[in-house]
Image (cartoon, rainbow, N blue to C red; front, side, top):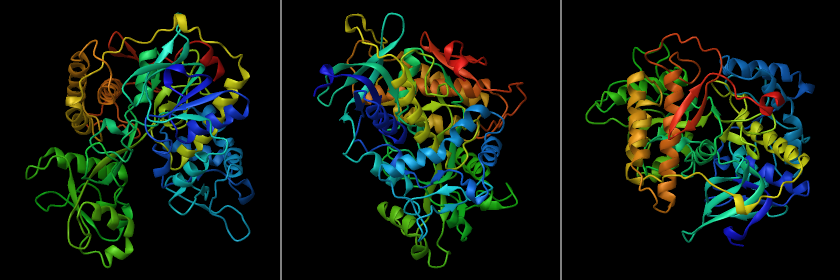
Length: 532
């Protein structure tokens, strides 16, 4: 099957937990489904997830209300409590459905799911698979050939195809041989994952280049909460710039490893009473500030010294293996580390079934903003959200009358593809000025650079994977910086070093108009709001 001949009731762009759940459920409802992914079907972020799935066990004394309380606390007042409760309450059913599809979670000898506790939770409600390999097991179950809809791998989605009235009726794609084509569909589901590659250092895989958010913006959709990006304070720095960074567990610092700069000075001394064991956001900010000082000409990482930790290689084999890939040994060398973009709490604004503000366009998973995460995601709520919202979107799509797309009237945004040469420069700028610790001056620099990149495209030149990804990163980076500028008071994982009151009590909504981001503090209007 070639892309320009393809048509389906539903086209799902992306193949993470949310996208594949949606695709499988939609197919089970009798809809024809086509999955489009720019790499392999299992090359998204899902398989890298080390955390579990947060799901309550009422028989053990836990409750949805208690889970909601923990979620709202982490979200720092910016969660949608109604949407959050609905998603959390659907957790047990979603996990049971996944188990029926073959996912194997850790259980006791009697087959009862084992549950653990993670940061921010006040009950044992996290289920895991293979200890720290939950994402890999979820991905394995969802990519099993049986029941998997037709998949176009190595096809990069370019833009949402629109009817004259602005309804989504398909997608334009770039095929492996460099040609472009269109896929017609009555419903377009964006499930492209996160935007971690906006930054020079990320735990996200190389495919996480904000594609879905950019496509939605160009189609006229509204985004929300994009300023809230979680960072892990210590990711291994090195290797290819566009690759996924390996996490360096906090347990290593708990065992005695210390953070130092290029001159060997402590990074966290005097910052917090707990020093290197301070909360993640505190440590990440301390590292970011030290990098900005450019000690000994090093401005993109610091070092973790674990040489004095007893039996460090035996005790931390995963970190040791990752370090070994860079030719380093934990017991002999300093590890280069930097904060890494880990998870986007915001995204394309949706209602409680995954509808965006564009008719016919849906978004599920990390690309979407459902209101569950607010200003800071609670641990292990992300896989849960993907399972629940993927299923809900499929059910809602199946309940709507199937529309036939009129290909004679289809149009797509006149996207100006940017040259990719400045991508690395932009990523470094995002890490420095829009990562952990932001101020108005730095955010202004990001917006100006994004503007120069998006204005400097080759006009009518054909798209390539490099130019499309560079365009998506620059546009979404500009939108993120605009939201972060407008929210001048720090909250959650949005840290403003020039913190000042701004009077905002809710989310910011940002759209893309006439080549620039437009910020509003009012929710989108129309049927989507009514559905909330």
